Image (cartoon, rainbow, N blue to C red; front, side, top):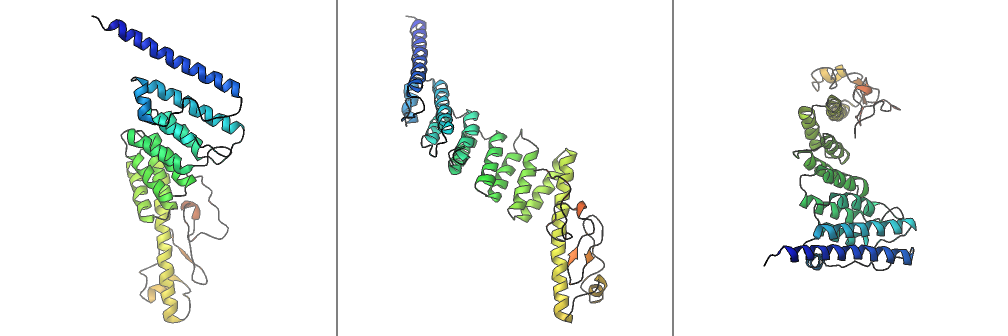
Length: 304
């Protein structure tokens, strides 16, 4: 006996059941107004839902994603402080359809924002996006989202740098990922890693603006290190002589320097009264943290 008729009948029946479920959901929402009860269609077991879906996991995931959006929207509209069901709804949605990228990305935003704009659950947002990366390891957007969650919401700059760096080496990615990795390594105080990442960005990127930005970061880090070393030399000179050097020549005559030190752009450093070091043209080293003249402000607008 042919199985075509039963298969078609079963398919139609499943479609009708899901349509009825959506209609029922709409009617429930319309009747209860702004009140949100323990959601209809909310079943906490993804395994049970998969069995009930009869193989239509994607369709059921769409229904749960719709429910998650409705849940968030209704709570947001009334400036709610608690979003208890938001993460469970998103978790079920993405377990039913692990490839539903929109649920990871927008869901994480819903979770991370502070109340009343969102759930105020950045750790849950990070967990959701990590799950997304586990199932979609080649999607750079998820690494991008995770990196900013770590940096902006958790203030984990080193972790953000690692996430951006992992996203930067994907087969199809955004060139800015390498820049972000290096920037947050710098911000997190991991200077050696930052230097390596900036050098990699400079060597491997074809975008001239990004290359110039990377070069300025490299030279600024080198200048900061040089200023630190020069000030240590000056401190040793003061300990030995009892007074600060009047010029770099004093340090040369004392055998502490080989000549007037130059910054990474080729300009001589200035030795100020009191033994402080200053760069001549801070605009050529716009990312320095040491040696800038008092009151100097960066004129260039750096890439992220």
